[in-house]
Image (cartoon, rainbow, N blue to C red; front, side, top):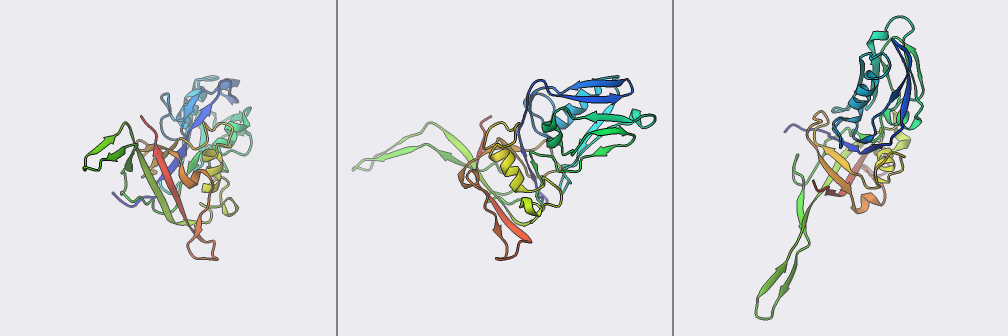
Length: 269
């Protein structure tokens, strides 16, 4: 497997009643977003990832124009979402009014879109997504889910007889990145709003964003950010659940950082 940087995605719970006001070839219309649990670029508890579900919902609204929604979430991607209605590249153009500012912020848009005759890309990095800019490292190698821990208890008799009581086991993993840029580490260093792990930590691991499922995750780990079909889902435990404490590669220099997810527990299937 080639050296990859990977990506992390947090689960998004879209409540019922979320809508977007749009203008397409049929005029003004309301687009209802299908409620459910989603990840941005990998399938959620239903059928689609959030990006594709938004495309489906926009296309089925109004006059049924064929909308296109995509996200640049591959290796070293920008993390930005692009929306377009190619049938409205002439005339008055297409429009979106974000009646849900939470959805707007998750997708990385800073305001409404009015009378556009071209594809529009959000100015900010999408939330619930972290794309590092240095290789992902595991003690067990790329693609390995982790090592097993059990609840086994042992008793040894004076004569040397051993009894073992065991009922369950779980898979745990530690990940690290050894040379992250300041922008991918700290909010204060971001080149694009929302691209840092510190923001992902607040939104997903602490669960501060309104549509976060629960604190701690779940979090999908992709060894290859370009491979949306291959991932393992974990919950964040250990010290990372308590605080975000990256280390400087060189003391006193904020150019490069080390960051470790010290304990991820695989979510049972």
